Image: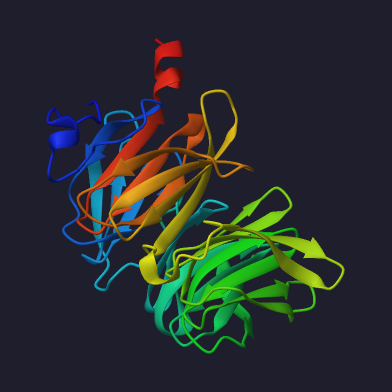
Length: 320
């Protein structure tokens, strides 16, 4: 299915219209009745939503093969080491994707908004500002509580792991950098004036976006991490739309591209490291989650419950 609406730029809904000819919508997956908040990939596609379900989609034909009722709103999904992790209120649900064994990881207080794996531990960021860690014990074939990381004054809504460090973003407008080996908070980064919604590790940089509308690029300095670039560069006060989610991918030529969704129902594409704009993808509703896939595929989950699959047009033409 093409991603271009037959009304083109005259469409009042802008449900799949874009200002770039380089990327198009391959297909749209419908089934969730409320916002999609988590997307994860293995041999199948997994989506989780506020309709209290996880859906499994066939990667070949895009059909939903399984719907798993969760009983509570799903705010995050993660696949790692053969396990599917689901962030729920007051728990993380874990499924072994080979044996179908499952385990409930208790301990979080409030909704689990973010999940990450770093070193040999699973981390969950929750509504009360804590980050809890579990490790898998092969002797008992189960995850067991390991430790907690504390310091945020608001909900932890995004986590990223790289190089033995865990990065956490919060509604308290700060980013914390944790050393996993020592379990210490190395730095607390202040640069945003609103909720830090999403983090992305790219090469040696940390990228962050916020409801303040800005994307910031952080780099290591002798004294810690400092902002080396802010997009947009000009101070636009309250005129900016809030930034919701970040995703890194590569175009048909293998060049890095950053995607950022905003609360004006758009996803904007930027070249890295220049931040030159490559185009805009429009949706009927806010895109709450972005996930990169193989071959430059991008999956976007909307507050309507729809999931769109995007691809680079040159990649399509070159393969047939």
